[in-house]
Image 1 (cartoon, rainbow, N blue to C red):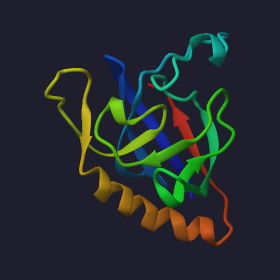
Image 2: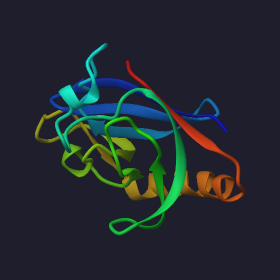
Image 3: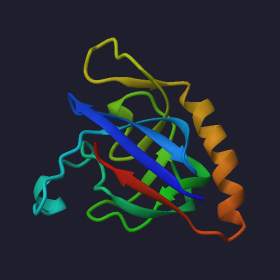
Image 4: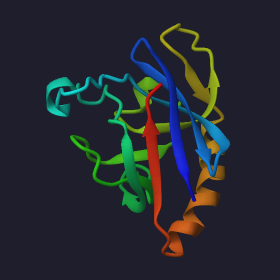
Length: 146
């Protein structure tokens, strides 16, 4: 299983993207702003709770999250970040560095975009990923910048 998050753009500290499974679009994504700069370490550019994770490939695991419950999709070994989840939410105030899934929609406040139908998108994504992860197969998410 190949899972890819292709970021499209960042506007006003909000990054919209698309999530693909085996080359087929699964849903849209929303993250905090991309602050990545070549050669600049994460610690020098990260604003806690307001920065998208670095590009790279990360193992997706299931964890028990006090906030999101059992079998929360989580990314392992993200440089400079911890507790990175894939979860439901609607705008950059809901991310805290995590990846939100849903359907991209205009933002009424004009600050970069939102996602809607997030819970539905998360349920569909979980239905595809959980059985694979539970079977013992490794699932990795590759994050790419525009």
